[in-house]
Length: 102
Image (cartoon, rainbow, N blue to C red; front, side):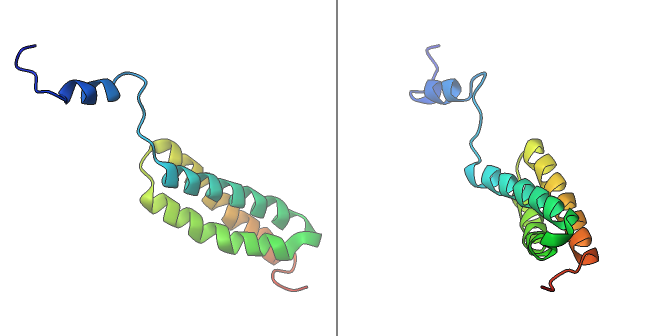
């Protein structure tokens, strides 16, 4: 089009079909939240590893809450909620098996 401003076509090509915004830090936080949440769940379930399960739960819950606060996509939010629930339940199991005692 003759009215097109120079440089605007590159913006349109960058936002075309299949283009995706990159959320590196938010994606990493969501991945860390679900990983630590699942680790807390597994370690809290095993009575011999209750200390490490409680530790993972204490780290995972605030991490997933912060990650939920800064998340930008629905996929990140799903991972955060799964990590949050895993951390909470794993921490509960770990407390039931002895918590922070050795």
